[in-house]
Length: 282
Image (cartoon, rainbow, N blue to C red; front, side, top):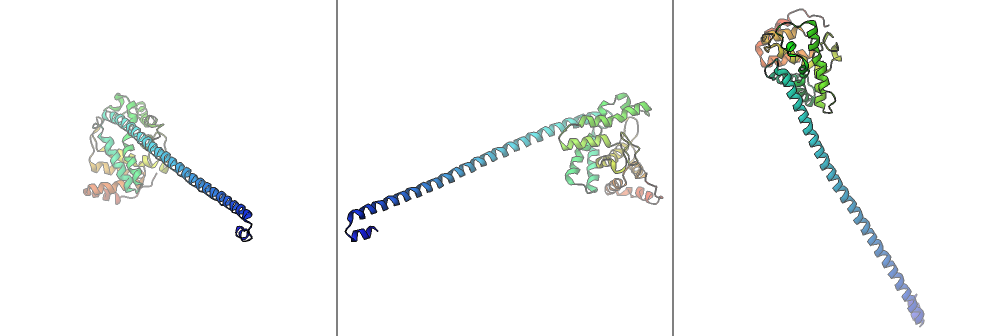
């Protein structure tokens, strides 16, 4: 349009139109610049927010790691304190607490033989060491008595299961929680004649069914003030004889497999039972 005005010699109109065109271009340029600036500002703000979020995430992760680390330390301290208490209880009537370690190791080995989860097996190794922690409440006159216990004394002895569970109760640490279950149930029997609750069969927690076999075998083969140490043959014979009565058959079978790997010469004890008529499971 400005070109047409110039050709018609209408220079004033051409100049005015050219100025208007320039102003329009300037406005469009300014608007475009503003848009680009705003776009850059938005991008900058977005990146700033992203960086702040990343910083917060890193700080949160670091804090969570710190909390996890401190929690783990507290759990380890708690476990160590309970283990020392358990050793103190065992020290009074066993070989300086080695019984608890052997029971834990054998329990874990049986659990592995039963194809339990590996992490659970290792938890059981430690939890089983706490099985007799409640004995701290049993008087020496009963715990170390060389002769048979009276009915009243045996009732007091049996309380070490419930006391042990009470000592270990209230923890949020899964290992200690497992220890409480072990402490409460390691004297239950497959046929329901055990204590403290008279549970039977699969109503007995799996950890209790495993630990009771390990505990009885090690107790039988250990010397106490009130008994001599049984030979491994005698102890194995007892465990097999109590299969399906005192002990879960599957757990006994796993235990036998372990013992025979350690001591192949004990095969004769197992074979002697395999020739006997099968007894009904109570």
